[in-house]
Length: 428
Image (cartoon, rainbow, N blue to C red):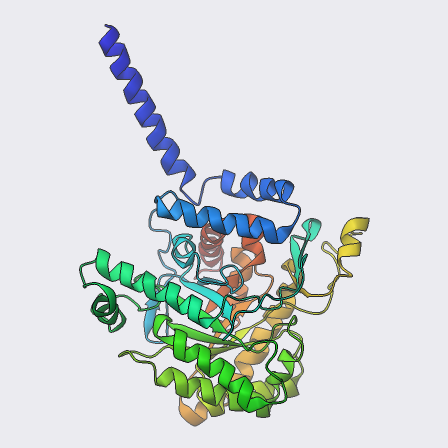
């Protein structure tokens, strides 16, 4: 009897452990929304430290296959086609979550079809002095002035190269350079950046702060240098000319400088040493919103052969609190005075309006080439209803950052479920 009891006890423990494992590692688990994000905010008052802690945790958990992930067929009915790929769903994560390619695979496990890493600069740079990230909890918003801190193109390229070689070895395509070339040239049957069927990896590139903004040749070379080192490991190269935290960077969105930069990037991308070449997109500011500014950016996109636009970044402006008339606590009102880019749900309406403007402006030139440029949208998208509005307005992918910070690792899973419900209600 005692041995039977012990056996039943061991079985119960094993069963409980298994159930606990499947619960904790499922993005739908409530603790990922209601427990972990507020706990991180409580333990780590500095938002950057909380972010770094979360990144290290995901990286460690992935090593032991204990990271949260989507389970089941949660992409049913959500597939889209862009850049010659059929993606599982129209969701992505924005750059800044993973600046140095620490966790592309754990992020892909959370459900997005596009993960954007970076921005990456040619040479390492530390960014702005700390503290440089500030929470506004009542608004689920952030202000950051990172200043494009980056470990540099060589370090990120090394990390991405090793990721490809590890994949090649695990799947029997050889070791070192031999295995790398086999995977990058399509023998594995997966996109060479994401290494995951139905998903893409975007790598954002940027200039170094010390490169003079007026020297367009030098600025262009910064971007080209990054492309030459990183493009072979990317499905999409994104060109960041819109960060509000690097002095002078947004001036590069003027039609002349932007056209020069984008021509250089496109040429470098087309020279990538693999069979397929990465698509090229440019990330634009939400603060450049006049018809003239948008027309100039779209002209540069068409003239240079860029494949699409990421509409939105953080904003220098300070939107009114939500709900309308809400009075911020004194501490949060003080945070609003901090320098940096604002992100949060208050940006959604502007993002939606900009997507409509860019869709119209880009389509007006499509007749010249027969090519319809792709739009990704980022800025204030927090739920499936908003994602549907963004997609209906002409974007192909709805990207998130701040929503993930406050909503936890199950955010994209919830947004997919909400998007399906919204489409059912709309008869789509």
